Length: 267
Image 1 (cartoon, rainbow, N blue to C red):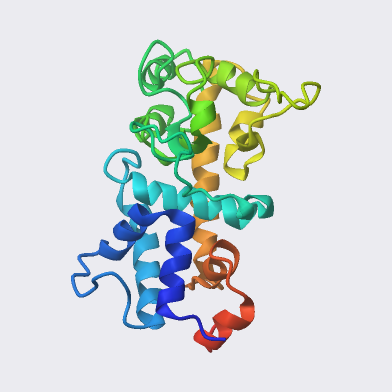
Image 2 (cartoon, rainbow, N blue to C red; image 1 turned 180 degrees about the vertical axis):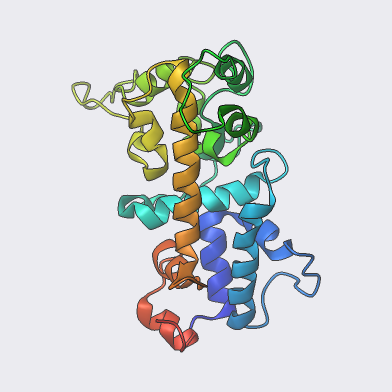
């Protein structure tokens, strides 16, 4: 069975949401496109073009938050099979006008306040803080901002609205995410429920026991940046060439037969 442009559009929008679809469709000043592609070959080329946006931006939060959703959802679905059942584009059930999605792109280290990313960076810049032999620490630090990809992740509106979580320091966030929820199931009060995102592939930083104070956070963030760069690149590459076969198969969820029927030259 061949994948149609309509089916591709519907699957993409279902997984990532309409705003990511609009950003994907318009990237690269592709003014010839209205709301769909003329062929799946055209869609294939746009995927390759869009994934290259990763290396062209540094602020992944404000202007490019839709692309960041694309990056994080793609990585999560590719590397954690259990996450493929989650509807990351689901609207917020409560109808809150300020927050419209169940799953949000948010900072790991807060962007504001006493426990902010900038305050942590200022500590890391001190000459006597955790010197690393053979590395230029200041150069590494200067490339990081609170809106770098390594400081962003996906969490639920439920967790992000928790007063004990949202503006707290990193260690407190780790504790809250990995602890049972406060509210009990009225039908089964003895059952402990946890936030689902604690098991996310992209949230392994919250399970890391190696960094326990500010002096170790730089290494933690740099390692996460390297891992995300590697993981995202591998989704759109095979044998060293641009090839979104794995994106179609393990992110969008099309079968290998469907992909090969649509793109005969795929592996």
